[in-house]
Each structure stands twice: as structure tokens, then as C-alpha cells.
Image 1 (cartoon, each protein chain N blue to C red):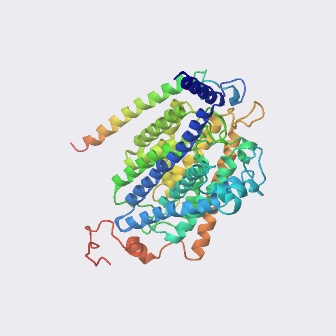
Image 2 (image 1 turned 90 degrees about the vertical axis):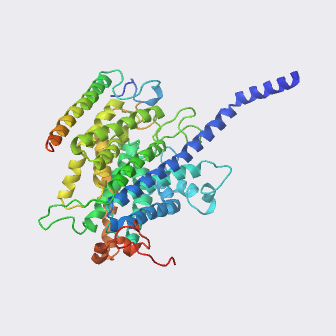
Image 3 (image 1 turned 45 degrees about the horizontal axis):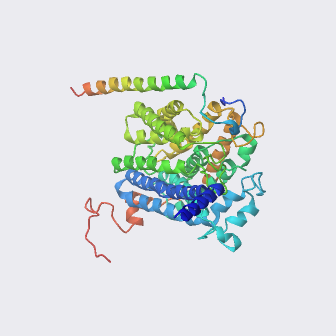
Length: 55
Length: 468
């Protein structure tokens, strides 16, 4: 939700992104980091499996 | 000496009091800002050119390039002739009544956007109006980009003139109507339903993507694309590296595209005297764009890589990342942008395969990357951005972003693209102006359409002929 009391830009004077003042920024940052790590794990496993076929 | 210092001091105080220096600087900044978006957006066309030619087989490489170059060339004058007028004339819908912001309606458009009569003063060199041309230029490049999105989908079998007619309908009319309705302070979709589409995910990308779908239904697949049992074959382009570099150039150009979506201070029509805003008048910073575009590109690439491992889809994923978040680049948190973009890259290939299984031969995945993902982004903003103001104004008086509004917006954007694409291509097909003859398609469109060879030292086309 809009992080200011009024649903108007006339009162915005600082951070204005979604979730400011809530746990959302931290939560999404954590999820994004987990995605990066998970993708690397999956990538390493599948690439290794394919490479083994050429042994 | 003292007299001179006193005189200078007085002059300085006078300037400070008037604020003239700052205003002039701001005006020059605004004009330079939009002027620079034009060459940046031309890089998008360099990208589309490389990408389409790379995705074409050797026998069609130059004809694909010619088609792409002509789309750009025809888009500029037709947008000058009537596209700019449509944008200013119809934000409130038909019959073109003026809107509350006072910068729309047929009467207003007649006064500023025709190339004749009194309004011609705003459509050419004018010392008293240094901004109209640069703003027009940025919009003309939006138009050219929109038409080029359709261009890639139809390669290797469309007639040149039929394609140009379609490109003009899309670039100088269809998306302009969507922009007037959903990307203007007086647009009825904004004022009535709170539609918010900062970076044109719906009104450019989805309109162009579904316009292409309408055309593809009538155009049909390339010879050899589908087997008798309906299964599809992959028709590889002749140069994947060229295609991938082209896609990267499109990403470069998109920095200019999204930059041009910002209304900077310094002009009579700027929302604020001292800060930038979106086209809806809601605040935005270039910092927000830098954070979010970079995260979107990264998320899209990673999402596509984990599924496909294919550089074509990875760079398409980068585009999908930007498109899926474009509606809310002004207010998304960067990590959320990354997650949305990742999901777009992740589902991209599956969506393209789904379409292909239904007999649609989209040579470059344009319907999926721009159409499907564009609508995906428009609707997602309705979920994540619900409650945010969609338009600048006082509390309680301005519409807010909401899911239903974004869904309505998505449906309108779909119809603005699909209906004209299908109808006009159907008419062109009736008159035999849509698809090349079978013999020409089999021989290759370069030998039919282009008096030059893409790679003259390769193959049997490497002949020595008189220069004239």
C-alpha cells in the first residue's frame, strides 16, 4: 500500500516505493538473493550432468 | 572598479530575484534531455535490424533488413502527418472533447498538431517554441519502436508494401489511440479507472504484440514451419550472434525509451518546476529508473537462463524483465522488480511454446515477449501497486491504482492491438497484398526484393555482375 497517510503525491517527500516502512523491502531482497543462489545451484547440477555424458 | 562591482552585484541580485538563470537552464536541460532520447531510441532500431536479420535465413537476410528500415522511415512522416494529432485529440475518447487538464481534444490538437495553417508554427522551426520538436521526436520514436516490434514476428513471408501499411496502422494510429487513452493526464482510462502504465508495458508492448498476433493469424506460418501432424519445426536464423547482439542493442535503446517517459521540469507543460514526474504527474526520479531497469534486465536474464540456457531467450528474457515491470518502474522496490522480472523470464519460453502449439509462427517470439508479458506486467501492477495514486492531485480527488482498473486497461490494450491487426491484415489478404507467392518464398525473398547479396562470397549468389 501507499506508504503515506494521504493517497496523494503532494505529501511525498522521501522514499516512495512500494512497501516502504514495512517488511516488504527486506523480504523481497531476501527472496531475490535466494533466487540467485538457487539458480546457481540448479545451473551447476544440470551442467555437470550434461558434461558427464561426454566423458 | 567599485562601481563595476556594485553594478555586477546589482545585476546578480536582479537575476536571482527573477530566477531567470535557473529557469533558462531548466528549459535547456529539458530540451536537451528529450533530444538525446531520440538517438538513444534509434539504437533500438539498430538492435531490431540486427536481431531480425540474424533471425532470418540466409536467403531472406536483406529483405528482412529492408522491411525493418522502411518501417522506421514511414513511421516518422506518418506520425508527423496524423499520429501526433491523434494523440492530442482523443484522450477523452470520441468525439474528442477537451479533458480536465486542458491539453487534449480535437480543438486543441487542431491548434498544435497539424502541419498546416496556424498550428504549423508548432510543427516546424520556431524560436518561440523550442520544445515541440524534441517532444514530437521522442514520440515519433515510440511510434517507430512499436511498429518494429511487429516487424520481427512476420519475417520471411510478408510483402513489403502490405507490411508498411500494417506498420503505419500500428505505429501511427493503434498504439497512439491506446496512449491517448491510458498515457495522458486526460486519458479516460486514467481518470476513470486509475490505469497506470509508466513505461508503456501495455500501450506500446502489448498493443504491438497483439497487433502482431492478429497479423500472424491471417499471414500464416512460413513454409516448413509445421508438419502435417501439426507439430512445429525450429527454423533457425542464419546468425545467432547477430541476433543476440541486436537484442542487447534494444536493451541499450530502452534506456532512452524509458528516459523519454519522464516529464522533466523546465517546460510550460512540465508538471513541476523543480522535479521530474511521470506522464501522469506522479513523481519519479532517474535514480528509480536506474535501480529498477538494471534489476529488471538481470532478473529477466536469470529467469530465462535457468529454463532455456539459450542466449536468444536469455536476451529476450532481459526484454521481458523490463516489459514486465515497465508499468511500475516509478514505484517498484528494486528487489521486487527483480522477482517480477525473474518470473517473466522464467515463463517466457513456455508461453511462446504454447502459442506455437496453436499453429502461430511468430519468428522471434514478439507476441509473447511484448504482448503476453506486457499484459502480465500491467495486471501485476494492479496487485502490487494497489492504493498508489495513478494521477497527480489532491487526496481523494485522484484515482488510485487498482487491480480491476489494470485488468480493464489490459483488455483495452489487447483490443487496441489485436482488432486493427487482424482486420487490416484480413483486408490486405483479400487484395493479395499480405503474403508473398509460394515460389518467391521458397526461392528466398532477397532474390525477389533486393538487388544486393547479404553475403556475396557465400553460395551460388556469389556472382560477378556489371556494376550498373
